Image 1 (tube, helix red, strand yellow):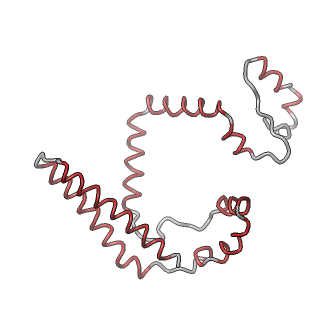
Image 2 (cartoon, helix red, strand yellow):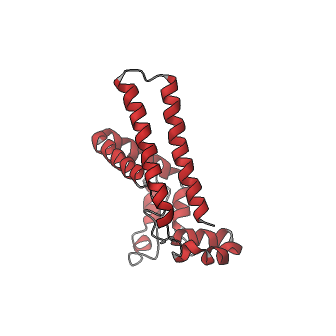
Image 3 (tube, rainbow, N blue to C red):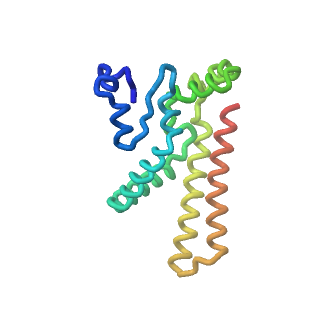
Length: 178
């Protein structure tokens, strides 16, 4: 509960005692508290979130599956280096400033923070190779499924191809940081 919001309703309606009477241990904010950290520390939050997730999956399985498939498809097709980035990362700055303040100057000076990196040349190679490797994985698994021979060798080849695709993306992204 935030005693300073709502015009002081926490105190006015004696909400702390009301919660305790109903068997709920309230969490009351103090000056300087981090609201997100308080929420993470609360064990009751885990139970409540678990309940929400389990019941959402049980009540809307088709919607959940559809959302997961759409997200997976979008992520698989976003293969260009730099795609989907926007540079708005205040949470990251906050974490760096709080836990490793000696790194703030270096982070703010990095080329990525000023959008001084052009990915066009890299993407001329990266996009076709990434899409071709994904197509090869789907063709390999599709062919095996069509022939009803999803054997260990086919699954291993598909796994290795996907892993190489992801590792190549990670390598290209890391080289861009230099």
